[in-house]
Every structure is written in structure tokens, then in C-alpha cells.
Image 1 (spheres, rainbow, N blue to C red):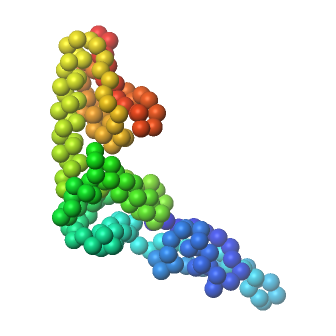
Image 2 (image 1 turned 30 degrees about the vertical axis):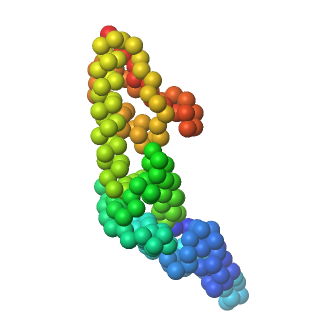
Image 3 (image 1 turned 45 degrees about the vertical axis):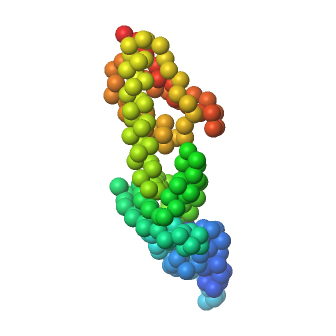
Length: 204
């Protein structure tokens, strides 16, 4: 739960100030007075704590619902929490290909947007995953097959293999898949959109 503490002269201004600092709506912020500073019997200032009183995961769900409603799309959204720091949204609509986009780019942008919104409401960085029409699950299977096939070839020939550029999520899938292999190791190289994985033979 996100919260901030500050001093202010008027409680009437506390909510507005907290909303500006936290960059979220006033209606999800609760103000608690921690201390009062007085002089000659008059309160000069207050020390207050502003607390976000809504679950960040619910904000993500609401934002997705409003997004699809504005696009006039009927969508089924399932929300789940794998642990305290990871939130998943699984979505199905009549326009899955449109929302996924070429090579998953539109889906990646939707996930980036929802992740930024959700993390406005949390003190710790939350991992937010969005999948549409099972695209990421299928993509994961494809990448694991690619990882296994390439790793076997590298182990056999002792020649490293450079894979095509991938985003951080896809690189992590391959890193994880090959993390226990004795004959090969993986390393990320390159910058920005050209960042890619190299599968290398381990020294014997």
C-alpha cells in the first residue's frame, strides 16, 4: 500500500496536496492526522499521512475494463495474483488479433500502460502481466522449443548461437529454460530494441 507523510497548514488542502504528489485521484486517498503543532493555543500546522486505500490490482482491472469499454469491445478479464508482487490479467475479446498486434507489439504496449498505472498505487514495484487470447502462453511454448533446439546444437558443435532480438519477458523465458543446463549458458547482449540472447557452450 502506498503512503506519504507531510506537514500542511490546513487539513482542507491535505487531500489536494496528496493527490498531486501521488498523481492519483483524491477519492482513493485517506488522510490521517499524526501530529499537531500549536502556538498560543492555535494549531499552526498538521503532520498527516496520506494512504492509498485501494488494491492496485483492482485499479488494473478497472483500467482494462474502461479501455475495452471505450473501444466498444466486449471483453472477458480474469485477474489473478501469483504472489504478493505479481499480478496477471488474462483477456479474451472478439478482436484478439487486433489487440495483440504484429509480433505482440500492441499487447506489449497495453501491458506497459497497465503496469505503469498499477504501480502508481503501490510502494513496491509490482510485476504486471497481461495476456490476450493465450498469445503469451503459446509464445512461451515456442520459445522453450527454440531454446532447447538451439542449446542442443550449441552443446553438440561447441559454437555459440545468437538469437534474434527479443523483449525482456521473452529473454527471461529462455534464460529460465536453460538455467539448469550443464553444457550451455545464456547472456544478453545489445542495446534497446536490438537486445538479444547469445547461447554459449560452457567450458569443459
